[in-house]
Length: 136
Image (tube, rainbow, N blue to C red; front, side, top):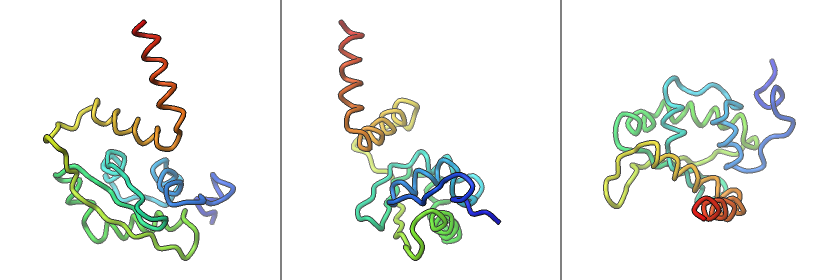
């Protein structure tokens, strides 16, 4: 049977952030039912090359992602993408905010933009230039 990598990708991701992105886009193994929206809505950090830290809003998503069988399934799905033998450490924490902001489309868009800007530094400058053109 073809692995997820051989079906859609020629080479495995070179880093844990790349493997995480591939997992969320559906390139990894099957994810537990109902967790994908919580994973996509989480704030993600990679404190070391072999560790991932998820900040999840308090509530049922946080509780579900903290279940040992869910974490095991996530590690297994991620393991199909990340270099063989690498066991990524996973930490799931509550999403802490300065003022308990409501999680809505604006908050998710802001956080998604921050994530994309971190991956592509020129993106933030381009958006600022576009904003200035629209205001002018």
